[in-house]
View: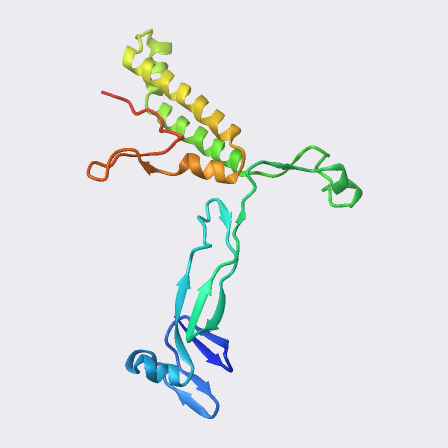
Length: 209
């Protein structure tokens, strides 16, 4: 990406090479490729340097729009401070009702906006349902034909539910968005030569055959 700098200020951003007018001169798009850095900068075209130090994972945070600044001969694109997504549900309040914002089909105390915890736990339940569905036929067979469920299958299904409960507890007990992010962040628990990546939340058990 390039920026046009006029009077020490960024006036235009080029996401891709394209022709443009500057004063009475029309420049073709190929100057971005064919011209040297010095030639482009001589007419105010600078390649953008990206500073992503404030950019955070969009799964957990809402990033600001990029701002473009020119200083010391460099155009820098940077982000402001990211806002954590709400980790807990928000509810409709009496204040909402007093202000006339409460929808007709809602009451004070009803869910207003889901937080990350609710979303993550719902996803976890869906994952568990998918895992258990693979062995549900053993349960159906036992119900219909009285055929015993193999012990390894019962052990696996119990282990999945036990791990689900502990994972839901960890999610529920997370103090804020940063704590939720930490639960899901994989880190090397091994060595550099023999890395083992794991996350504090852990994983749902796999069936051992």
